Image (cartoon, rainbow, N blue to C red; front, side, top):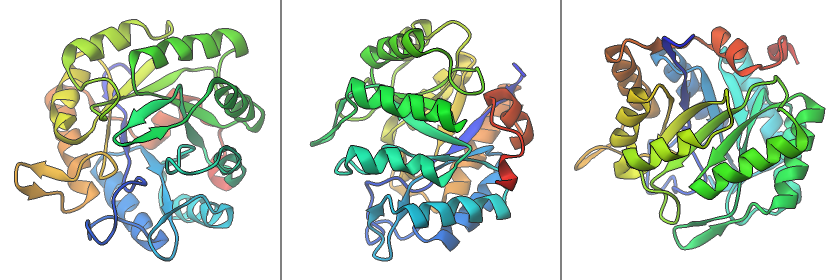
Length: 279
């Protein structure tokens, strides 16, 4: 397993407007098409935010359920729903995301300044969300925006035991204005502070995308890419679609002699519930 790279694609996010980024997948049909292309390019996990009929971020439960079902029917990807939503979403709506029965979900380990906004994740909310993932047998991916959140992750696992599936997997989200910088020193410091036996991927937001990808591959980590995090492929050249970001990540992983991990192997690696596709 050490010779493979888990690639997660985050195709949409909650920040960018469709009017500004026409290639952003916002309908269920666009999301399914993107997911198929990204699976073919080497992704094993899709990190899902959804939009309403006006392409605005939403946590509508019926639409979440429809999205999970559509992705399951059309791909073999692990479906990971965002419990972050948009920075304006109330806690109860974010908790309710788990009722859509995804394979996995994100769980952010602390509050962080997010550009001009604040992404709120107080300790009691983290605990409630974590305990619900354990009860519902959903694998959490711990999103870490700064070094203090790595400490909070350790505190959470020490206090409430291992996640469903028994394996701690994290994503270092780097380069967010207000979070940790996307550089090698910070990545190494974060990785050294993770719980023993944890695995991790790294996400470089914006222009930190490539430096973080190189640092993660050099340090034995996995990768998350996608238009949630990166809208520019190279200076002056917008991303044409999520698949090209996955293709680049897969190519770099192969150069590092760590092939992209297929979805079935990723299920075993992350401890995703078997038979989840049939739910």
